[in-house]
Length: 397
Image: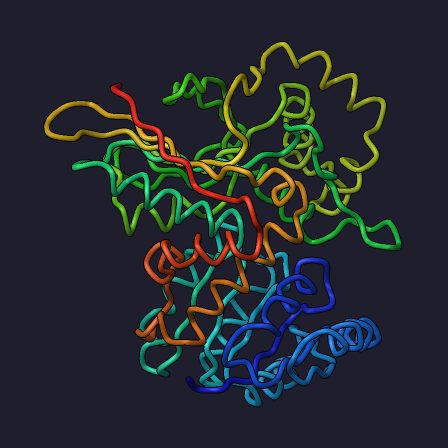
């Protein structure tokens, strides 16, 4: 096995620290560099890891907006794990730097717009011999692999939906995480971007752009019924290319009616220019009375999640000429899904493991469903997170 030096870009952030911790224990990793704009934070992270992992860990300052600094950092390693968001701002430039420097690449890009642009760099990555996997976190990432499993049960695929939980379950996570200074984290800023403007969906087998927070009523096998809402995650963009659903596809949020109503108020103010992504994320963390009242007045328009599971992929199609519905979901994953850093960082590192040992053999820009071996991934996930499994339910349409 080739021994590799890995740059954990954004490794001092919440998700980055988890991904770096798991990466340091992967076979074949000979050195790990924690890179962050905040050098002091990178040094703290490296110091914590150095006492508990089997490889050397060091820190480096890298500002992803400084091309020379970014190229120098990537040029000195074999692979980069990029957890710097929001990706609609930074993702494309970091991938371009990886291609320039000939560095293998994996990220957790969860914005649909840069996903489209990154896929267009496939020819450049192939020419440079760079293997890049984009969107390998929870959603996208695990959700793509669940979707591929659902689609594989069908002879022909019609509709395909992926969904992730926002505020359902016994211990919902903070929906608008903030840093130590109270500023919204990149995840919250990203979320505001993807509930405003338009988002990518598939309609009639073709990509379309539609307003977010559109309700989608689902009737799934096992008596799972309810309504979820569209959001601008990139699964429809990649699944349209790879699995080719002939009907509709969307990335969905499983969210309570009250939260959906408040998000709709924020969407309205974002689209009207009354809020920026940053101020909207801050507002979500500390809701204002006026917006709370507006949301309360419109909450009756929104339906709740009913008995929908929190994290799943659902497909409809035909088998032997008959209509079939398929539900594929994670089981035993409640604690994992209620920790955003763990649910994103662990899958990213497990995806990187397959990149490092060349399970991903072909240069180019790949989405998770074509790059990552799902059977191996879910076996690795179960070892890292005991009790987590995959359930498959089928029923007639």
